[in-house]
Amino acid sequence: MDKKTLKHIAELSRITLSDEELEKFTPQMQTILESAKQLQEVDTSNVQPMKKHLPFDDLRDDIVEESLTQKDVLSNAKYTEKGCVKVYGKIFGALEES
Image: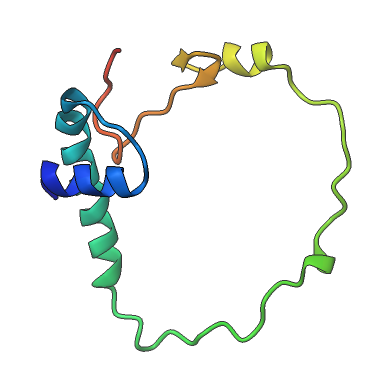
């Protein structure tokens, strides 16, 4: 993945990326694509296809119950940003402070 390709994909998606964002996201996209490539290399020749799907009528009823407030959820998060939990991991790279 190079910057030119990422910029083209962003334009097709109607997303405007700055030069700074292109610089930051290009290696991240490359990491994501490499992870997907690993999945393609797995031998699935002996894996039987699914013969049955889960029908939606087997799912539980969606019952509205009391839940945590945003403040309570964010109080348990190590990193937050703009009212959301900020997640870091292998796909997103090392911890980056913005």
